[in-house]
Length: 149
Image (cartoon, rainbow, N blue to C red; front, side, top):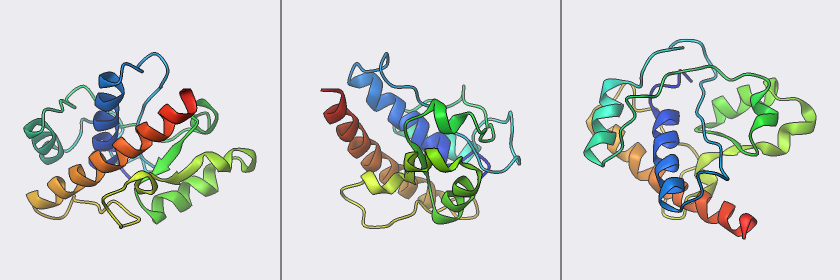
């Protein structure tokens, strides 16, 4: 929604996985929000703290809002939940809708469809988001590697 919790977590985790796989030159990664609440602001301090405990530094990230150009710039535009997916579907040109999906579709160890928003919860929510995002990032990378190979 505001690009300060879930989506920057997914960006930094997936970026790390892509770097470790040596595929940075093949994969463009970014995260955006569907709302304009936090444009230009860094990720939530609790998000950053949880990520740093696992070795992910997201201090350089800044919130931005989705743009129509994103639907052609990226092969995958993945939402964290159905509400945001619905917003993306309304904004996305019809011919680009195949690019849309839910991030957790790529998870193998989590059965949930949606990554819950940890913003109004406790520290354990941020840890749970990281668990889910790491799982989905691994699956998304495996998926893309099959295409690239």
